[in-house]
Structure formats: structure tokens, C-alpha cells
Length: 216
Image (tube, rainbow, N blue to C red):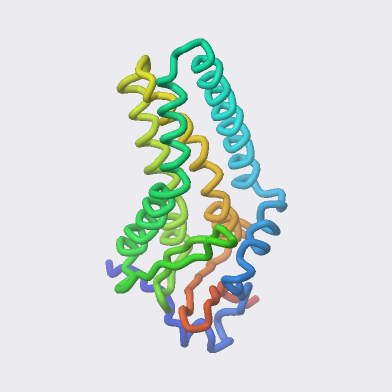
């Protein structure tokens, strides 16, 4: 049986079988995500619980690293500081590269990256490539799953080593980086029974979300 293809942009915009559900300017994407994060959806509630747990764990071990440094054991603080620097530099690049790899797996022919350091917004996009719910879920969750699994593996491999403080900090910090991904994904989860598709237009710096019209 042949695989069901996604509709083309022209088919989405034709106005017969699909309707525009959202048009998001990339300069305003943070406000769009914030609105999504305030909705009472299961995925948002689960993420909030997870994020609060990660923040608590991160603060606990960061504070412990400082206390140990005062007592003369500097290694935990050294690894925590290294993780802080890594998280706000290379980890951002890793996060977006994982989005890019997921886009490739979703069939995107060309990936581009961008962002605004001033607004602390970074993104990977596939210009005019339509994604369905399943494909967007892969793209949105790839960094969260890969980074969290990698850091957990680091913790389990060397649980007694001071480097564990670094792994815990990275895990905690990265959970915060994923808020935008979860917010965008929640748009697909708002109506589980509907077909939703999305695509980016690089020239316009916008993302479009279309929903299939159900005819009675």
C-alpha cells in the first residue's frame, strides 16, 4: 500500500479542503508559544510538571556544588560552571542541529538555521516543506529526547564522579530550552481528531498552520 502523501502548499491554500488555522510571524513566535503554554492541554501540564522537577533538581545540585566548593571540594562546581557555559553556547547549536536532522528524516530537501541572539530565539526551518502531525512531533521532540537520554546515560555511567553535576545541569537547562517546541507541538494536540499541517516560508519569515475541513 502506498504511503499517503502530504498535501501541497497549493492544495492547502486552495480553500476547499483546508482552512488557515494560524499564521505566525517568526518575530512574534515567542508570544504565540506563550499563548499556547497557557492552555489547559495534557501535553502542557506534563511538560510543566517535568520542567518544575528539572528546575528543582538543577537548583539543588548547583547549590550543593557551591557548598562543596566552600568546603574545599571544587570539582562539582567546576563541572557545573563548565555545563553552564556549554548550555548557553554549544548546546544551542546541538539543539538546532537535532531539529535539522529530524527535518531531514521527515523528508525536507533543504534545511536552514537562524535566530535572534537579542530575543534568544533560534530555529531550524525547511522552506516551503509541508509537515503533518506525526512529522512535526518528530521534529519538535527530537532535541528533548536525545539530549535528555544522553545526559541521563552520562549520569548512570559515572554516578559518583563530579562530572555528574555537569550532566545534571545540562539536563535541567535543556528542559527550559524545549518550551518553544512543546508550545508549537501543543497546537497540533489542541484538536486530536483533526488533520493539521504546517510549513515555513523563509522569505516571509512566517509559519502557517492549516487544518482539514470536515464537511458534514
